[in-house]
Image 1: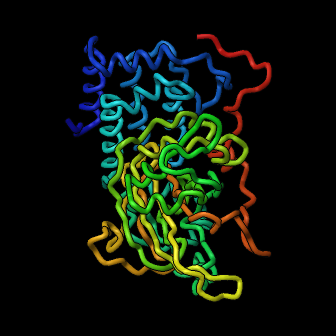
Image 2: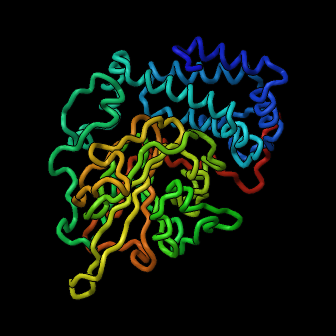
Image 3: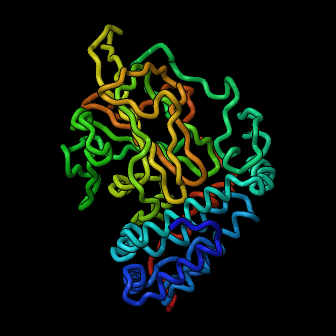
Length: 401
């Protein structure tokens, strides 16, 4: 049953835990028993030691997280996501808790509760805090609009000309689908299940695309991750032009359960060498774009496909496609799309896009002279999102329980 407010939700968590024979309590207790002594800085404000926690502790944490939403800049919400993630960090029992039916349903309920919170008129009071945090330089990129709620501000639109689409008439040039940090996931996608990402880790293109017949087109090809930070532009656009031949935005229902979430931000290069296998089950959509290929003379070299897979992570409850891209099937006519056209948007939280390319068509990330490769950040901004102090130090003594 969906909770109507945080009081109902708290009572729900405590009631589920009070059932000693219930799946929720058994899975949560197993998750807590499965925790190993942490090798992180115990004074870090993004770390929470869950050892010894019970249902009341869990309920109180959710209440604190929800109450924070009325008080502080939304960017600090990443701290709560990180604190919660230590339950499942390198912990099989923790992953079982957050992804099994009882835990998953509670987390989905909380995510929807947060979504309604960010859709409420009261949330609009936080918009100015967010604007002040971004600063006039970054805010200059966006149109003024109806920012009466935090979610409306979260999906703010770029002003005309704020992002130039590179070589709009050259179909061979691939552009970033959004403002993101880009990494190669794998450059030799294996068939069906599994495809290797790193040792002992697998991800299935077939599952990622929920059984689409187009999945086999990407066997032997390349996957690229485009990670969005919480304070960046959260609409996503077509990386190439052509025709969208198939699309969905209604797949999956898992919102939490990243095995090593802190490492997504703290491996020295965001998302590099990361385990993307669990994203097969996360809330997501996909669009398959049929696009023309050119040879080195600029002549037609056949046609192929590029996949765009927006994935909602953690507190993201919405992966929304714009009409007419919402639901395209084999029975419906393909929809023309220009490179840079808006496909859809995320609301509130963290997210990424995975791009899929056919074999030998996208061998590496390539830039031309003078193109942007990054930004020299303020130290405070870097520490907020890509801090390194949750990584273990050689010889660090773990805190005691």
